[in-house]
Image (tube, rainbow, N blue to C red; front, side):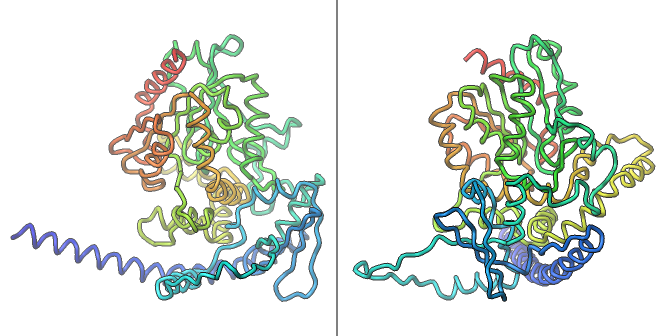
Length: 477
């Protein structure tokens, strides 16, 4: 009897909590919609005053673009009668790389009303098969700012200064500007000339190579370091790697830079990959591109969300990653970072531009007893890098991952191992099992009482031994 009452009470409290979460989320995100709209024009004025360049904001002034057979994009701004015609030489390459979530993010009120319409009008009108369909033109929704940015990239122009006024100008963040190589920062460990095998480590979103070098690298056995050359890379836009403001940070740009900086730069021919979160997407793309070179794939918390039929892949994944809810806190942070470009830019202005101040304060508060490599990775990037990587890689590649996983299943024979923290609130555990459903031979290991970060940090010695066993087994096979 008491158990039944407890269950009913828990059910009622859960229901009340859900309702409060929905109501509070509606109020908070309606306010954030307005705030981001205001900040959009604030930054527009500031950019013009400081950088002497008038930039069209990517929220509010959207445009419809038509792609025709001649390779030109016709852009028509809302409220204007004339269109801009922009000629590009590699239209297909550019358009397929850009996520529509960069310029198509409905306000919270609009999204709620659309959901209500779906519930209210759940009817489908089927046209007669005998009716002739009118020929349609291939159209997309795109912002003219993006088209101009593409045009600048195609002819080698830099539309923005190397360091924007809202980005950090310290030597650490801009060390890449002193080199003519324009390659990613790579930290290597192990034998330099006679390595039997190579291992490429790819970090996750708003992180850096320190996620691996400060945790795992010191824990590998001396035997492992005599066999394997360990290569940890800072992704484009993060850590000590280049942070070009004219980049769109697409999947192709990230992969190309890894190939240039790691595979070609270090003469890597066959290798193992260890990747975390965002890095898992890049790892899959590299594996598909170099199927004969991959010895093993180790994925930690892969963000793989199978998209239901009829859904827009990018929009669906954006709503899964950033559900616009105030609770849990991680969902709120992801929602702010994913939906609101100018609020996110403000956060970046406060944290990233002033990271030296935060480093100093943390050292004072903790007495310099706590190593802050995780914080350093989190706040040492530019807003352009994080914003475009989030949308063009995490959201924008959602329609490609099924094909990547199928290719790895059918054409690659390498071992695939997936680790996931049981308490991960950033990427749900189901994502790893989704990978296993697509690749039946993949082994999924759920690490108890560990989350998105502590799956490595705090158990680095154990994880280092697990990796050594994976590499050893893969080499034998």
